[in-house]
Every structure is written in structure tokens, then in C-alpha cells.
Image (cartoon, rainbow, N blue to C red; front, side, top):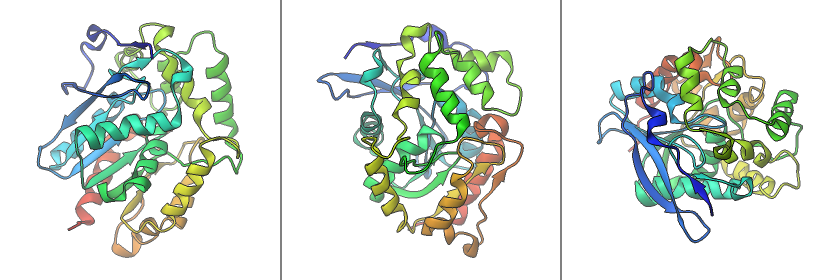
Amino acid sequence: MRTLRTPDERFGDLPGFPYEPRYADVPDQDGGALRMAYVEAGPADGPVVVCLHGEPSWSFLYRHVMRVLADAGLRVVAPDLVGFGRSDKPAEIGDHTYARHIEWTRALLFDVLDLRGVTLVGQDWGGLIGLRLAVAHPERFARIVAANTGLPTGDFPMPETWLRFRESVRTAAEFDVARGVRSGCRTTLPGEVSAAYDAPFPDEAYKAGPRAMPGLVPADPDDPEAQPNRDAWDVLRAWDKPFLVAFSDQDPITGAMAPLFRQFVPGAAALPAAGVDHPTIEGAGHFLQEDDGERLGREIAAFVERTPVA
């Protein structure tokens, strides 16, 4: 597998993101190894919160959330998915599969970091990957926060907005990553923030991951990952651990998933009776971490505090 590694100097002077990168090697599932990057914040002995980003962002997306969670005494771990951020970037679109991304992320979180008692925060692809990890390894997880994400099976039509996005990523001569993030926000991003989203990708050769991900979403019933996602839903329909649904109010891509999670996941349906409400982040788009990351961070911290586990 041919891989690229973004030069470190691309990541100088990141606004509001002072966290030192850490690195670990995971098997590339092709006979070699990939270096994955992650950042941490908060006390080393605090309850663990894993924040998984999606397409086409990286752990920088969680900078506002991380600060709030760390101040609340939580240990936050935010990886960069393979192909994104400071992590290695397989150079061919065909190197990226849904199953491989699950395994790469699992290897980092469990084989290398040996995380337990995890509160998962998954947004966009962070949920598609994180929820599959949770149902496969429930003993590792204490709680789940689903934030503008889903677990599609191809059995129902995908939103037209997403279909247009998938086609534009497939056909565009140049994939403008920062523009892709800006289009999913309701607030205006400063120039230095947009630059931070472009930083991992010096040129088009580095963008196989962002190019691949839309095509890996199981949008058709016969997609190879459609049945594994159906199986995951079967597990979620019996999931009784705390499950917070923290969606924004202006996400045309995943908004329809929020009521399904609240209705069909027992751990979500039980929360209001336990005095924990599912929040709606007002005035936020798909990237709610950018539009109101501090509010999202406060909701996650309160959720962890109100749902103690043995």
C-alpha cells in the first residue's frame, strides 16, 4: 500500500488547537503499517471520551468540545482517521473501505491505547465507524453520544443534499476540503480555521480518503456493508447503556436519524425518565462542533456526570 504523510510544517499555528500530536502504528491490512495520529486533553485518570470525526474534517474539529470536556475532568482522546489530519494517507481510493476504517480505528483505540469505559462521541463518519465498534465490542463502552450521524443500510433513500455532495466529490477536478466544511456550517469560519481544514492535504494526491468516503456509505441495499449495518441495528435495538442523541437543528444530511435513535435504542428511550434530555443544538449545521462546540461539550459533560457507571 502506497501512503503519503503530510509534512509537519503544514500544521503550524493552528488556531485554538494547542494539543501535541501523538502517534501509533497500526496494521494497514496489506502487510505493512500505518501511522495514526491522535490528541489528548484532560486528566490521564479521568473518564475516557473518544471523539471521532468524519468527512472531510479531522480532530481539529473537536477543539472547542475538547476544552470543555477537559475542564470537566474528562480524558478526551480525538484520533485522526486514516487518510485525514496528521494520520498517514493511503494514496489510492481503492485502499479505503468501510471495514478497513473500522479495523484501523479499533486497532488504535483498543490494541494500542487499551481504552475501556469509553464514552463514544461520533459525528458523521465518526458515528458510522464508532457505532460499529460499539456493537462489536460492547464491553469497551460505557456510553454513546450520537451527534449528527447515522447508520445507513441502503434500505431507505439518502437525502438529496447528500447525493449531490457524493456526486460533486466524485466528479470535481479539485476537492475543496475547506469549502466542504464551510458548507456544512451555519456560522462563518475565519480564514485561519478554513486553512486548518486544508492543512492535511497539500495537493490532490493526499485526498484519496476524503474522495473515497462518500462512496463507502451503504446507500444501496446490496452494498457489502449494508448487511453488517443491519446487524448493528439489531444490536442497537437491545442497547440499554446510556445513549445520548445530540443533533443540531439545521442538518439536512442526518437530521432524520435523530428520532430513530431516540425511539429504537433502549438506552436512548430511557434517558428522559432518568432526568436526562436529548439536546438539540440550535442554530448549528452538520458540523455542530464548529457552530456551537462549547454547547455540545457541556451537554456531553453533563451526560457523563448524570449517568454514572460502576
